[in-house]
Image 1 (cartoon, rainbow, N blue to C red):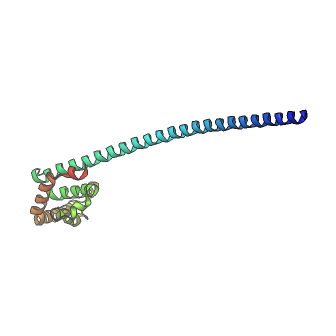
Image 2 (image 1 turned 90 degrees about the vertical axis):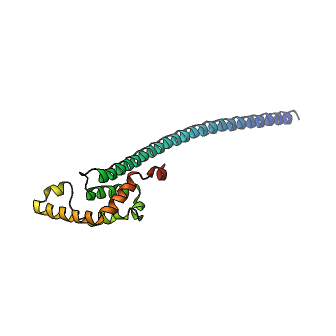
Length: 174
């Protein structure tokens, strides 16, 4: 009977040792998981902050681009009205391109549809370096064509330019 009790006692001790050992291992696993989770949370938080900073930078850049387009439209529209050096055709082409980048649907509104119409009528006319490469006769022919188009659409273009010169784009994009 003494041997049986000693074996029982050893079994209980071994079993307690195993239980405490398993508890210790379980605690170590839990601590390890907590450390891992904290590191993952930190990594995710840093990534989210970087992403938010990049998004903010893109929003700022987009706003700067919109502001530039708006200011350019206002300046060109004013030049069409007040500066003889800015022909209606040149102003219309420039504004058309700017509106395509800022608010293409605006060119479809009745007050501004003339911009798109004149742009389409003058689309085939070379500009910048290609204009400089033309001989005098070709330049004269295109100049006469532009003058005719401008004369036909002058009132509508000046009205559209006047509206665009003070158009509240900021209300639509801020």
